[in-house]
Length: 219
Image (cartoon, rainbow, N blue to C red; front, top):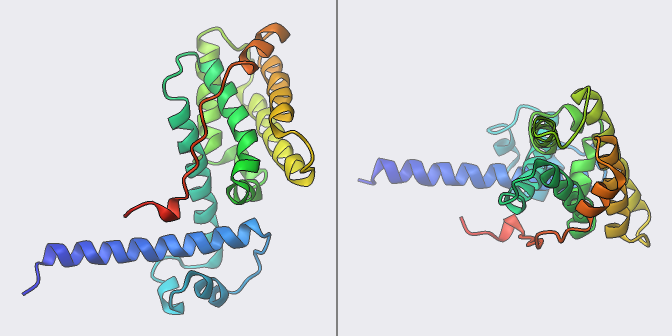
């Protein structure tokens, strides 16, 4: 008789693979700007049966929301890893903003999924927004930033990040690093740093971007 624990584990892994395939397919459609596709087309892209879709999601909209959240978390987790050893929250924030700008070109599909969330990026409970707010609040407590209203600061930060990403996709001839660092300096000045302080932070070397295709990771 099979070990019931192993059977459960295999079942859970199979369910996880199916869910991941659906999310990956949804992210592909989001990156292409195709949100009016039928559930059948999504399941065909994911190479799973139509009935399996409803074991994981009640609606297509629920799947797309999960796909966006997954992309936001993947983006934010990468930034967390790359800034984990930095003590100054102002530098953590600046590095995250500068790396995000570079990721629009380094990971264009992930970038397009993140940008597809549009204004919802500002109020999302996952991904970049809560981490940016955390870093800004920490920098205010340390006396690095001078911000009277965190909510309004987040409006400017999120707006700048979204608009920058859209510009870099629309203008492939632009230098993404130079454009990102200039916008980062402008954002840092808005947050209370002097021009000299902002330039100094944006001149710091960034952690190396090691981009891994999660689809190729083991497990």
